[in-house]
Length: 387
Image: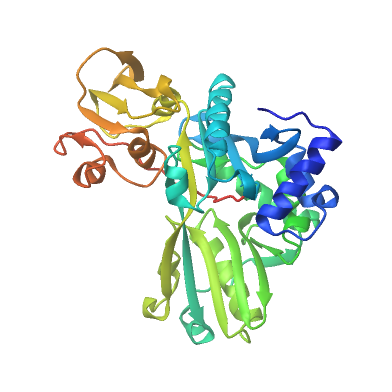
């Protein structure tokens, strides 16, 4: 059931989360937790007025290709030790997905922990994080730049804040983002409390406009870049120049980037890098018709697509015809045989994840003709977000 926001329920939520996640602090006094709680819907199961299980749901605006839509960030999935294994989370997930559908929120994301557990609810890995690791011996191989300047501070410093905010908004106004949460003001404004160790650097190009930003911190002898974004190659070079000139005494460097990034191209010798990719976010399609309507298709044509095996969101099951021609891109539900068939999990990988349809067919995720001309534009995920 959806819990009312009152002191009694908040105290119960805090107790349950504290026990489930071994948190030592009083969450009711934790401004970071409260900032998210205040902007959330809470779902829980009570037994004799004691909270047994809990899930937090945060709505956010989002970008899925051509559409500005909404998404739900799901977290703090927890149960009391005495309630585990009783199916409480399944009951709550069913209610949450039904409510999201009624609220016209077409998909949800959660962090990639316990992946196999969340797959039973239709979630699949869709957003990946790319990690670059190198030592200070790699610094001479950086491609640097002599123009422009980098200004550093924290999120409360208006000059660097405005520079980063301008850059962040650039991809939010394109039709290239595949599965990207649009961070709201409250999310940004808790940055210094949520990540007090992070500094912010913004590179301003030769004409004085922001071209790149990064959140970074130093721990022991390692320089960490927690997020980096640039609208042009010179921006990346500007930030790498700043790192080389100011942190050459660090022994080790870790830079986290979106999966699509090609930071290795800014090193004259790529052999000095260790590069790894790991899952970061899982997604769940709540409204298949809405998500398929957001897609961009590579070629002209008309195709039928079927969704099977979605017991939690039965409205997703069925066959859709997608048509892409000179009159535009259109979707409608039909009663016809399907060219391509898959479960909601498989379609989530193809539509919100990085898997192309032809690879999904080869992997047995989708049944269909891999010689077909149907293929969806993959787009990018410029920002990976933890709620």
